[in-house]
Image 1 (cartoon, rainbow, N blue to C red):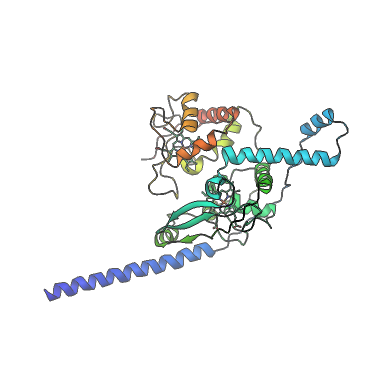
Image 2 (spheres, protein in one colour):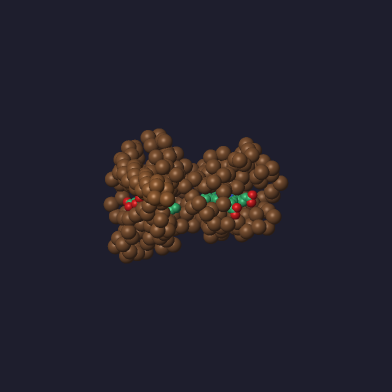
Length: 328
Ligand code: HEC
Ligand code: HEC
């Protein structure tokens, strides 16, 4: 009896030591990953973008006397309007940074951690006062903080954003009412620490392999083309996969269902009409009427603002994507 107890006690002791050891390993490995500086290029672009030749010609035809200052004002107003559309319809910054951009929640689950989206306004506690275009590029398209450390923000979804789109978003953010809010930096719980250490919760800065290649300056023209559609679908690939065949959402909440197959395969959208596709995005319903769950259900709020041209372009592109079975 005694021997059994001793053996059992010894085992428990060993397990505790092993778990403690693993956690100590996890803690130092996660800390190492979070402190390792990531090198990127430093790009520059105007904020706002100047008017295009075509816009200038049109304005000059309407107001031949328009002064330089007037044209600059129009350029800024148009950039702000484009930026508002981009964040209302296509790039979900407010999902984590709050509807008023004064801060929001990405993850608030104690074992994983508390990961908040910081204040993006010019109010007290706002993080962007000293941001240069290069800093915007680094955080949004590379997942790298101004001091070079990898951010907890999933920037993988934004790598295909063009300079003009990023500039428009910045012009819009600089125009929103300032919010005074001090938002805590991300803190990790034991599960979050182990997820980062083991690479189960990948940091975008480490997943994005290309930190030096130039970004595209202008997005494709907004038209019902597969080229524009491909660009728009870029924000879906973070969850639906680079080949759009679906599967578990990388770095997603373990309770989420896998992302579904968006290719024209029998496992995917074969047999879907354009109307079925629009209903999935705008009403959050599958072809068979079943409700789409979180996180796809969050798309409804954005899809309400997507233009018909954008929907038609996405649909045109999805039909040309190579058909692939869903991952097993
Ligand atoms: C899924 C959640 C999420 C989305 C979507 C998101 N962010 Fe973030 N963002 C975060 C988190 C979390 C941080 C804090 C990162 C850290 O400190 O490691 C952050 C940090 C930032 C920072 C500040 C970094 C600093 O200097 O403190 C900026 C700027 C930013 N995000 C801009 C954006 C923009 C612009 C968009 C939309 C194009 C966006 N974010 C979309 C979660 C998100
Ligand atoms: C944050 C992750 C995420 C993003 C981003 C995302 N999706 Fe989804 N999507 C999902 C998940 C998860 C499901 C499955 C939901 C379920 O089973 O209830 C899904 C389901 C769908 C479906 C339903 C397919 C079917 O067979 O019923 C369509 C259509 C769809 N997504 C289109 C898109 C498009 C288009 C985009 C980009 C504009 C997009 N999704 C972006 C995660 C995402």
